[in-house]
Structures are given as C-alpha cells and as structure tokens.
Length: 104
Image 1 (tube, rainbow, N blue to C red):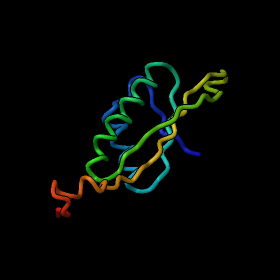
Image 2: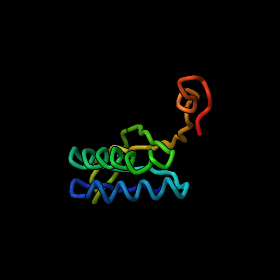
Image 3: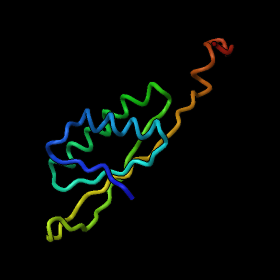
Image 4: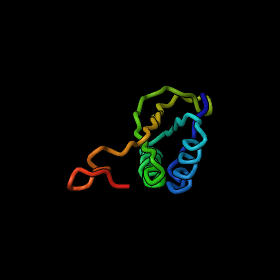
C-alpha cells in the first residue's frame, strides 16, 4: 500500500490538492505521518480537501491508526490516516419547494 508521506514542513494546501486529485481519479488515499507537527499538517490538508471536494458532490472523512515503522534503522511510531470517500446525494427536502412541488 502506498502512502502520501506528510511532514511538519509539508504545505497543507499542496497535500490537499494531492488528496483531491487522488479522490477524483478514484485512487485510494492513505497518509503517513511521524510526529505531532506532521499529523497537524495532514489533518489540515484533509479539512482543506473537503472544501475542494464538497462542491463537486463528494465528501471525505478519515480514520487514524498507529503503525510501527523503521526510519534509518530506528523504530518509530507513525500515524496512518485512511481517507474515506462519500458521494453526496441531495436530500428530498432540498429538492422540494415550500408547497411540496419539486424545484429544478
């Protein structure tokens, strides 16, 4: 499984663009971060990506997990964030006018 690797120096807007592009292309999105600063940037990126995607009828949510990884021969704990895609469907109440007639 491939991961978007986010560091504390990553630009949240750039990571958000990568997330949105992967979602639009139907590619599974998984993020890996090591350290509080990296997790902060990753979560900001998911929030920004939601703003990019919601107007297109798609929303995303995420779920974090811990993972033990090795960096430079040293064992570290990473946070891996799985991004889940949700298609938005207009609710019936949004499609009906006050008199109950369908609006187009």
